[in-house]
Amino acid sequence: MTVVALSGGVGGAKLSLGLYRALPADALQVVVNTGDDFDLLHLRICPDLDTALYTLGDREHREQGWGRRDESWDLMGTLESLGEPMWFKLGDADTALHVLRTHRLRSGIRLTEVIDDVRRQFGIRARILPMTDCTVATRVETDDGELAFQEYFVRRRCEPRVRAIRFEGAATAHTTAEVLAALDAPELEAIVLCPSNPYLSIDPLLAVPDLRAALEKRRVPLIAVSPLIGNTAVKGPTAKIMAELGVASSATAIAAHYAGLIDALVIDTIDAQHAAHLPIPAFATQTLMRTLDDRVRLAEFVLARARELGR
Image (tube, rainbow, N blue to C red; front, side, top):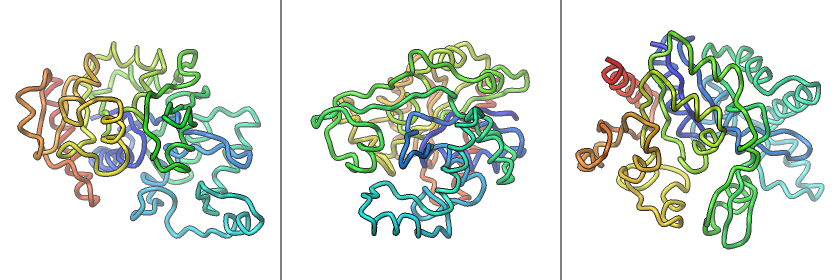
């Protein structure tokens, strides 16, 4: 079964790993959000892409969910001792990847090609595809003014009240030939929308016009996994943002957010009572992914439901 996953953040990487283990190794392609990407110390940093690389390459810091395992912090410590405010954590091995990416991008190599080379070096057989090689920047409008995504998410710890979210550059951006080929491949059997934050991690992908158009004209089932369990998110500000935008934090709201795009929604057993009231098929199972076994089991459940929808 050949599958495309749409992913962003830690939740997306967790399910992507489950899919990677549940499928033949080269049967998965993961399209990753780049709206979080930004420059720091003149280095191009791609948090969601790097989380995907570290997770599928078995290098992630398993307790915190982001960054590299067995990391050192000499660079960051030295910069702080020299008076540089390091509000975004940069480990030494992590920074080496940022240096390499920045150098190659400035040499004219596309981001897609840079990431493809790194995933090969990491021994990852699944493809990891940036949603675009163009620059798209998530901007968060708050009561404290408009903030760049990392200013809101990391520096301000998601504390300001959100009024709106926009994706600067998305309207004129285009996805890549690699993403379009993955979505139109004859062997493709399903598209999985991971339990990532809909507003911060998935909406940037959907804001790229030709990427959304390709999803809308797909010929295979698109099944989403809700990021909510019992009306709250396992991690991150999903429920907080929904409340601040005047949206009820529920499986029903997630289904409505993706209305017209998804064919089915996987929800947690805690929310099973909502299934009968959703306008699309809903399937209940345990969606909390504490362990690798949890990730693989959820992936297998999603794939089985996708097969049923595709019959």
